[in-house]
Image (tube, rainbow, N blue to C red; front, side):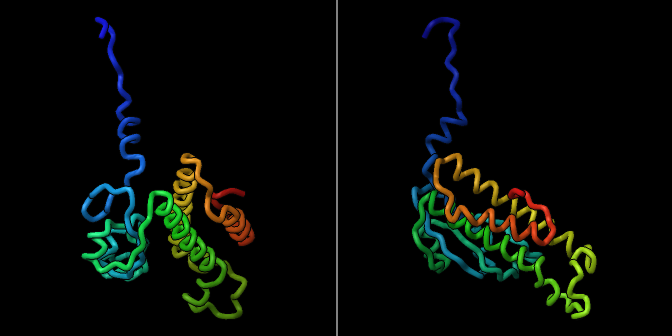
Length: 187
């Protein structure tokens, strides 16, 4: 090496290149080119879900969650799962997020009326007018899910991978807009 000449290494890029096709088990931390993914309602396995959930008491939450683990950890937790690579995992994550967004959409459309036992004479009322606090909570949850969806969407674009069911986003935007709400997913 010449005197006065220093070599610069982009450590972020180097590390990204080394681990580009590796997935980390959320339980034991082992790095693998494939993991296994499955759904469970077990509160104990919930901490190994790559997605956050809207459960108030995580120790008792029995929401159905996507869990991604190495084969050994999945066997230990008795998780019925299938092998996935990085692209397969991202497909599962974006689709799981879509399901949650569709649940939010359904809730805003009319499920809230059942939950709150709204009188049939008030069928045209909007959630934000009837229960502003519940609406604010639901709206914040939907916004968080939309931000999460956009991170998955960006991953597909950055990796040059086709987005599965690419028409879903425009359908969702139209549904939300028809209810009179704004969305981060477009207009």
